[in-house]
Image (cartoon, rainbow, N blue to C red; front, side, top):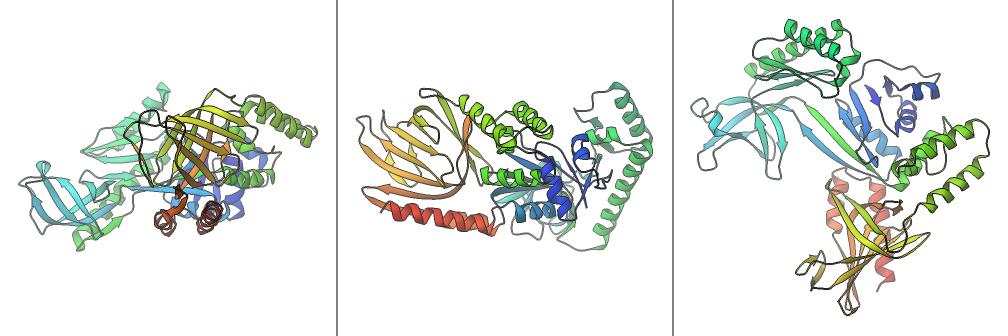
Amino acid sequence: MSVKIRGIYSSALTQLLLKNKIKVSSPSENVKDSFKKAKFDEDYDTIIHDLADKNGIVIKGEESEKVTKVIMDDVEHVAVKKEESGHIYLGKIIKLDPNTKNIHVDLGLKKIGLLPLKDYWGYVKEGEKILVQLKEEDPECYTLSTKIHIFGPDTVLIQKGFTKLSSNIRDREESVRLNKITDEKCKEGWGILWKSSAQDKKDDELKKEIDDLYKDYDKIKEKFEKEEGPKLIRKGLITVYMRFDKTAKETLDALRREVKPTVENHHTYKTDNFHNVVDFSENLIKAGFNEKKLNKEIESFVLSKAPKEGDLYLAAEYRLDGTTNFLKGRIEKRDENKIVLKRFMKSGSKYNGLDIIFDRGDYALTELKKDAWYTKHSFYSEDNKLKGEVYIINTPVELQTEKAATINLELAVVKKDGKGELINEDVLKKYADEGEITSKLLKEAKVAAKKIGDDKK
């Protein structure tokens, strides 16, 4: 197992993985310079890179589940969402359904797989085995295809597909080189997708990879012919989306500090678009400047860029189902440690847990308190009468200059007519049971909810 890491967390994660005896490959020059005694590989089977908003990472590859476990063992305030695709199954056709125009396929799993009947009408029969690949998972079924993709580190073989290059491959000479290899090695009835990582590899390496992928397909076909199903024949891609909260970033700061100068709130400032300030300050620390004074000056500078009363502001709630809920409002009040947003509610809408239908002119005051384990929503009528309150339990609130960021832990304390009620405890437990949050985070969320519930009785 070897991992390639890119992005703002690369130094911290390199330190974490190396401490856990996991090999790291193809490091950036910056990381190489920080780990002078480390031995790095060239080849890798798993890749880590930043989420688009930098508040977490994406882990892709053969060993993504193992890497995820290692990170979660040390960085406990995370939420993960796993996506699986490309698994190849020996399936058994259960029925041809002309009403839904689908073929029902038994994969040996709890849910059935579906193939579009129009593509196979007259070619398949009930009871036959069929080689299929998982495309997507829906709440009630799996979407399948018989157009097999075989995934390699730098290429993807696509049955009945076209050859194409990653959009990141822009060099004309490199495009010509890869297309030449395609002409030489690609068999009839197949296409090749060239990943951007192919640019770093020699011709012989790429040719060998393609040959090995064809051999893998031959083994898959052989297994399909010999065995009876339904069963998994080969694993495909597993992609893990890992979201970090403020506490997780502090843990990663500490890991980074073990190998190089690191200002306080390094990763929080980086996600808040203060890259240049952070990099410049850490170079000053390296040159001998007083670290304590620098941290104080950075904090003062960042606070000077904070939004003011009357400004529009966002609260980003990262949900455990992988979605993000953005709450937008105007800042009603603020100080160094708290922002209160005023948001107008849509007439006829409801809020989860509150048995209230909002009227025209109703509004919410949303309290975002630095490091708080909750976000408080107080709902008022147009004539300023309190209609109800909801305390959403979340990871400690991170107040950035453009938005507040939290991981919504689904638990909520609802208060109406002087009575408080805890809701969604079973929902949070389900996420913990499925490994999408740590057991420690589950316990901390319950403690926070109980404290709020006791305080609000």
